[in-house]
Length: 174
Image 1 (cartoon, rainbow, N blue to C red):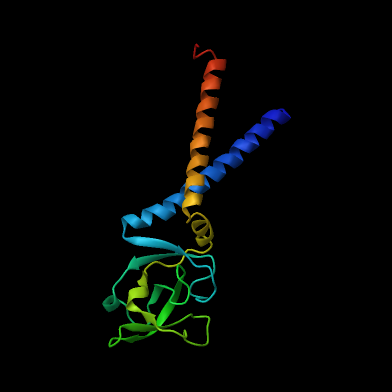
Image 2: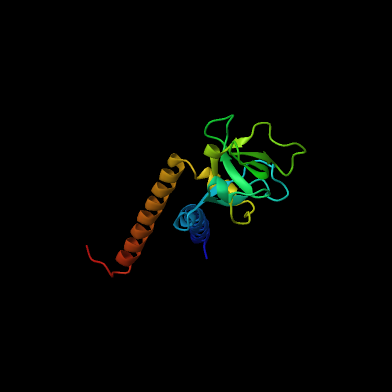
């Protein structure tokens, strides 16, 4: 096999691996929704060792009454709008409908109680290590559009190569 063919083959293999990886990550982002779950990436070590940094967790929308002490739950942050955190429930206050939470890696409970209206849901699946990173990277709309454009361009490229091969073999006339 000459160098040019070897290089083409290597590039095609690498490109195919990248495309398969992107498709798998997209599926991991989409399939849980069919089961009422939402995937989240864990970006800090606050829940180590139960949930390691970079893990993917699946969260089921859950109401206040279905969360219990020792459950791990996801919340919208009171301190930083648009941010989320996932911690263990160490106390549930039924009167004011709040939770006292704590990261497993922390010696102290969280400063502010988590309120019912910030509750996203309960972590219902064992964390999947390292899969959170690509899910996080593809969570923005821009990233999703970019991936779809790459897949569309790759598909067009594959179709063009297929047509050129057929034409070269004389199976397609102009």
